[in-house]
Amino acid sequence: MRTALLLEASALALALLFLAPIPMRVLADTCASSPVVARGEEARYVWLAKTKARANWRAKVRATPGLGPNFANWSRAQNTEERCLTGPAGSLCIFTGTPCAP
Image (cartoon, rainbow, N blue to C red):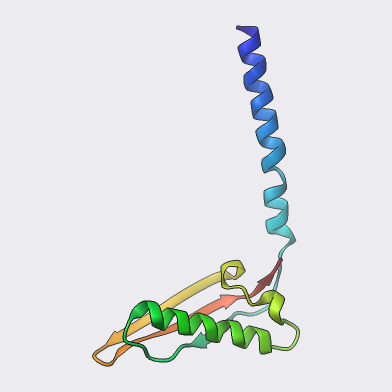
C-alpha cells in the first residue's frame, strides 16, 4: 500500500514539474496595446473568406510599425473575433485580434 502511494505521489510531482512552465510562457507573451482589424475579400465559400481575412490580418500586423512578423501569428493573438457575413454574392469575413509575440 505504501509503495503504491509513493508511486502516485511521484507521478503527481513529475506531472507538476512538466506542467509548471506552461503558465509562465503564457505570461511571458508580449502583446500589442490595441487590436488589429482586417477585412478579407468576398469569396464563394466561408472557409476561403476566412483564409483571406486571416492573410490580410497577418499582412496588416507585419506592416504595423513596432509589431512586425513576430506578432503576425493569428493563433497567438488574444481577444480574437472572427465575424463572417454571408449573402447571395458570397461571404466576407472580418478578423479582430490583439497581436502577441512569443
